[in-house]
Amino acid sequence: MDDNLATLLEVVADEAAERVAIVHGSTRRSWRELDTRASRLAGRFAEDGLGRGDRIAIALFNGPEYVETVLALMKLRAVPVNVNYRYRERELLELLTDAGASALVFDAALDERVAAVTGRLPALRTLIRLGDTGTAEADDYGRVVREVPALPRMERSGNDEWLMFTGGTTGRPKGVLSQHRWLLGVVAANGLQPLGIELPDDLEGLRSAVRKLLAEDPDRASLVAPPLMHATGVYTSFGALLTGATVVYLPSRSYDPDELAREAERHHVREIFLVGDVFAVPLADALDRAADRGRPYGLSSLTRIVSVGVLWSAEVKARLLRHFDAALEDVLAASEGGPFAKSVTTRGERSVTARFELLPDCRVIDDAGRDVTPGSGEVGRLAGPAPETTRYLDDPDRTAQTFRTVGGRRYVVAGDLATVEADGSLVLLGRDSRVINTGGEKVFAEEVEQVIGEHPAVADANVVGVPDPRWGQRIVAVVATRPGRAVDGAEIIGHVGATLAGYKRPREVVFVPQIRRLPSGKMDVHWLRRVATGSAGHRS
Image (tube, rainbow, N blue to C red; front, side):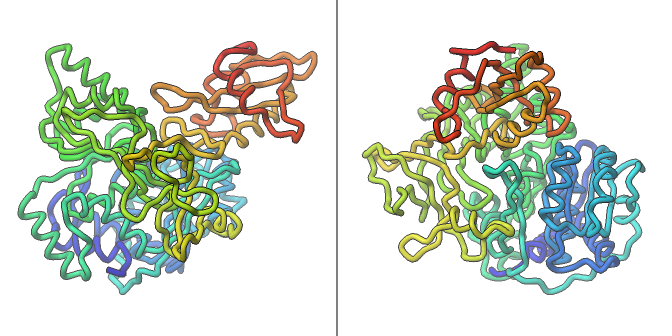
């Protein structure tokens, strides 16, 4: 099928109608309500002359309004721009500038930050705020979805653009620009394919498939725990919605594993989407505590849990499987493409951390583009098929580095290093860049170093990620101070937090007399890791 995802979801909305599409705490949004509210929001943007190709930013927390906004923009043939709600003013200004955003939908909790940057963004025509009034001049989201005339349905195209900002190695987010025909494949892989259904060739085929799914399993529900501002959250949400399932979001804005267990039990969810050990370790702890109290959570409805993009250790999988019988799917993917590889663990099976099976048409290649020989121990890079139209926004050089043609076929080579065992299984080694992946958030070492270096007491600094049992990696800053200037770790951490999002703050600061560098001026990686892991320096 070659169309815009909104057109497919309109088919689902017509078939599901009064069924519940989204649950968020006490809020329940039917398919009819979801579709109508999205159409009215699209109509509001159309009133300001926005339409196909215009980029409209979304700075919202998880909930039905995020889904409504993305759907509205797809209906309008506009391009959603995902904004990390943790961003401070500088980061927000940079992202909206890089995206060329014409409008912004934001939560009232972010009002002061939005008000601080909108005067420096002359291209920003429309502001819509969800929640109580605030400083920024903006239209009221509630009024819009109640009163504005709905945008009529229209013909759309698989050529319509889709944009997802993701991490990179430069200290600024990268926009991955693709098309809806690619998006359909990703969404179908997260929704229809796990049910044994391939994406139909036309809308009537989809209508029949959805009608059958609703008749056979009318109460199917999926719980999506990751933030919708990240690729995992949005792709898994729309994958579930494409099947007509109910999507459940956690009521709280911070992760609470007991809340996840309660919501999964309450709504009899069939599948949970989370992000590696950062979500799974607290969940396992919560399940253990409940069982020890003699009041275990009832999770017998679960058939699978899916994690994408972050380490999910074998030990934690085994702990979870003591509480329910489900397939645990660990998926390697990137916003640039994929999925590349997957592992599935069930009760009674031995799981190995970071061991995967390559998916069809994916490869592990060396620098010359040759397949790594299984069992050789050679380190290669994961590569997956990529359409010619997918690229980085306004960055042809980086596009050429990441998207490579090998043997006449285009691949995305996002930087994951791996070896291939003799039996064909893949062992993931990590990323080849300096990106620190902490709790599912990508942090750029250079960006944090730059901010630390702005402190008047700092002469030099390096930042590195070190292994952490819960977060995957934690951020450690190694700092050399200026002569006669005193500063402690708490001040450095606070200095970073005043400029960058909270998750970018170092969790630990190590002070050394001097940062050791190579003759080229680059950091001495081996020395840095020794210091960061505790064999040298003064910790604070």
